[in-house]
Amino acid sequence: GSEMCIRDRTGTITIDPDDDLSLISPADTETQVLCETEPLVAIEYQFSGGATSADVAGLPNGVTFVITANQVTISGTPTDDITTQTVYNYAVSTLGGNCVNTSLQGTITVDPEAGLSLNSSAGTDAQVVCENTPIVNITYQLVDGATGAAVTGLPTGLSFSSIGDIATISGTPTDNVTTQTVYNYTVTTTGSPCSGTATGTITIDPVSYTHLTLPTT
Image 1 (cartoon, one colour):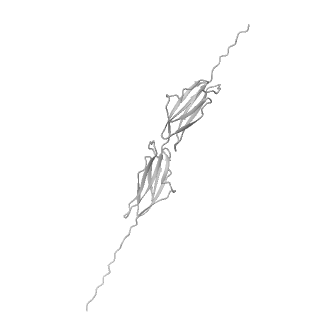
Image 2: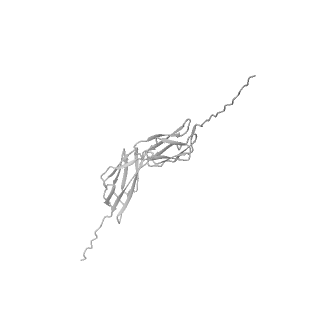
Image 3: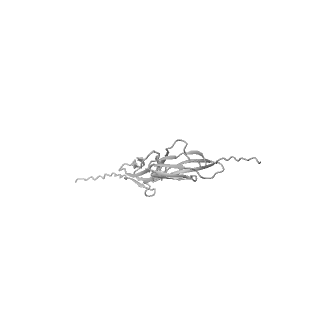
């Protein structure tokens, strides 16, 4: 008779997991809106599965990311000098896996900080005048999205107006001072998401009186 030989052959099939990526910081941190001088609330992602690291592209200048264990943390303060609202689209992508990498997108929207530029002569924002003497008008130009302004700290007798893109301080101080008095004022922009300020001083000197003693007869 004949003999039948049966041989077993064995092997392995190794299945690597796809990369996985998830947001672990609070919801909406990946779609932040902030002012250009405001620090970012940290955005955190966690990678798992086959991923061994991650990369981030599209961040604004001043904002960076670090990898710690299996977490990605995005933080910092945008430093670009912008004049209009700017949207930065960023993407976090996994690295190192043998299978499908994955990515998540987010946005960092930066609003410009409104500003005030002294438009009158240099030094007008630090005037020294005598009481009851009109000041030289102090004017500021509104920039980077400001549509108006308000002021605090002016001495009595001075007024403030904001027309178009020009803010003006004018008038005659009427406070009765007996010694040199310094008034610190602050102009604050309005009408934009991120307000800006400018400061100055108005110093009032008292009027000196000469008292004459008349001879008696």
